[in-house]
Image (cartoon, rainbow, N blue to C red; front, top):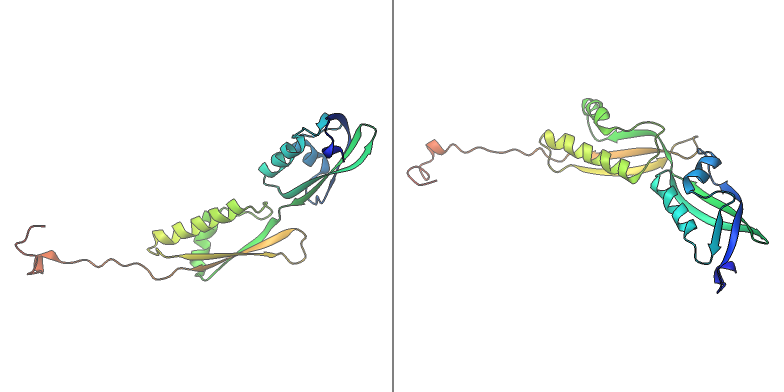
Length: 187
């Protein structure tokens, strides 16, 4: 009801709790959000909650965050930050290529076990795979990416890169010196 009020009222943040966090400390998440116990906010009319959500998203550690007002005593406001952390990389697999190619690609992918998985991480890995095979003459490489939960490890995933190199591109050369149709014509 406080958001539907026509007149802004000042509230003091009296408490902040974090739920849904598994890997990250509650105090770290609160610190990143920019919210602090004792802060004074105007409701309606504040954008402090949207700024907190934006700050958490920019870190690429959190996949989703919701802000709940859990209790109001006089002008003392209690807040809950419900977060969903991004999963961590447990392992990755390269399917459809030779062992030697896998070994060469490992260093180029930059994938590290335990790192937070982001869309940008997967896009960079796919780009590295395509560049690797393009340099070897495969210009039509297709890469499908699948993410599956790691067995027995909470909030961790295995990323599977299914690679189809396609056919190698070959360029045929023409011997112009022996071609009667071209001899004597201007090139």
